Each structure stands twice: as structure tokens, then as C-alpha cells.
Amino acid sequence: MRIGVPREIKPLEGRVGLIPAACAELVRAGHEVFIQTSAGVKSGYADEAFAAVGVEILPDAAAVYGKAEMIVKVKEPIEGDLVHLRKDHLLFCYLHLAALPELTERLCQIGCTAVAFETVEDERGRLPLLAPMSDIAGRLSMQVATHLLHQPQGGKGILLGGVPAAKRGKVVVLGGGVAGSNSAIIAAGLGAEVTIFDMDRDKLVAARAIGPNVTGLYPHTHDVGEAVAQADIVIGSVLVTGERAPHVISADMVRAMQPGSVIADISVDQGGCVETTRPTTWEDPTYIEHGVVHFTVTNMPGAVPRTSSQALSAAIAPYAMRLAAGNWREVPSLVKGINVDGGKVVHPALFK
Image (cartoon, rainbow, N blue to C red; front, side, top):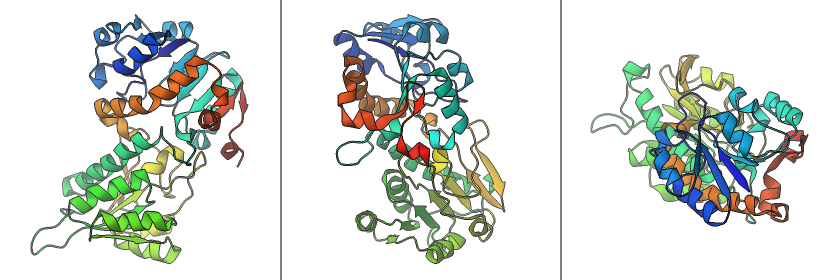
């Protein structure tokens, strides 16, 4: 199969769909791999690193899309990508279509088949291609939120972990999955008082195991509201596979927070689990609403492209290999990943 890796064009997005080591495996298997020039530079991989493993370097996106049968990229296609997509393309990337109805319609108009990283599901119900970026988004969101608490950034001016004679900060994490637990690990390590809300008892058990300063609770609306009102940082990490994230935190809950508190909504890719969330970019990552600093960048892991590209490529390479080999529709995990098939919406979450 002919596989194309275009350069990512979302603002300040530095990741690359496949690193050279993953490309080498595809080439060894007999596939042709094409990459747009400088696509890997921000991740630390020069064109020469790709050429050394047999990848053909092409001058622009039009050339990559023109030669390829399968497109492997990181983020959902935007206008500069969509103009090159064809009916016969197999698109393999993050899509998050539940929050992007216009993109869904456009993919249907093009008539291509699109397999979304975030809905590929293994036999145990896990999301193996979402997990590595959830690891990073969880940790990164807490690092950023901690910085945003500083007074020069518009925060309330506290050191999250406190010091002797000063109180510890309070962190609330909504969702104890991969992203939420990683956020909690960072917050707990800094010495904050951390509360994780989740409906799954096993995740609450895992939350308590992070450390003695971590509490796991069921998300009763009253308890969530009370905790959010007292929080210095709130992390939104609620996920329903393929669906738009539910609003667990209302605008009224945000109003009840202290001025200078911080919300980091990792769920923003799926619409956000906070009612006041709206998507931002790394060019302008934050805004203030009801006195609360909101950090809601839709491609958080793009800020650490070297780490992100390595972790993502390791996860997606076996699936890309299977897609390229043919008969991939016999693989249940990949079938679950199909969002649009020949121009028709097929993922059940997108009908809700």
C-alpha cells in the first residue's frame, strides 16, 4: 500500500503521524511511505532520518495526498487537508467527530473512509490509540494549570503544594481514567489535596492508591459542586467513547469558584465536560470566564511533539501495518474505529 504522512497544520502542532522507526517497519513489509518535507522537524526528526529508512520525501501536501492510498496523520483534517482528501482515501487519525458536525458532513461529502484513533477499541474495551495522548494530556494539563495559578498569569497566586505555614492547594479531577489519573499523579506529587470523581469503583480504588492525599468519590452532583467551589484547579477528563462529553460542571458551578482558580478541560476535543468550555489553540490558549482561568487547547500533547510522536507512533504502528496489509475489516478493533465508511456515518456514537 502507498502510505502518506502530511505535515500537521493546526496552530503550533508539532507532532508527526509516524516517526522514522515506524516508517522503517512499513517499508520492510513492502509498503511505500511518503512524507511531506519537514513534517517531522518539530518532533526532532529531519527529512534525512526518514530518507535513511526508505521513505520518499515529497515537497508539499498535494504531492503526499496525490500519491497515497492511506493517510496517517495526528489531528483531524482542517481546510488545508480537506482540499486534498479523495473518495478513495483511507484516513487514519484522531477525528473527535461528535464535537465536529461540520467536519463529519465534509468527510461524507468527500466520500472517504475514516478510522479514528480514539474509537479503536481492543477486546477488553480499552482505547489503545487514545491512551498515550491521554497520558500526556493528563500530565501536561496539570503542569500548565499549576503555572496558571501564579498571579502574573491571572491566577489566585498560590503555590499548589504549599509550604510550611501555608495551606496546600486543592485539585478536583473529573474522571479517573488515563488522563485524569495522570493529572492526579502530578498534583499529588506536588503535595496538593486531590479529589477524583468517577462512577467506576475500581478507578476510585486506584485513585486512593496514588497517595494519602488523594480521595476518590462518586460524582453526586451536590458533592461535585461543593468540591469545585473550593478547588484551586479543576481538571475535566470525562470520556464517553466516540460521543460528545457530557457537561458535568455547569456554568453555575464555575460561577461559584473563587476568582483566579483554574479549569483545564482535557475533554475539549469531545466538546468539553465543563459548560463554559470553548476550544482554544496554543496561539491563544486561555480565557477568563466568571473570573476563572480556562485552559482548553484542543491539541494539548502538541506542545511536546517529540514525546508525543514517539508515544503515539508506538501505539498506532501495528494498526497502520494491519490497515496496509488488507483484509483489515476482519479485525474487530479496527472495525470499531470506523467513523465514516465510504462517505456514510457508521459509528453508533455519532447517531446520538
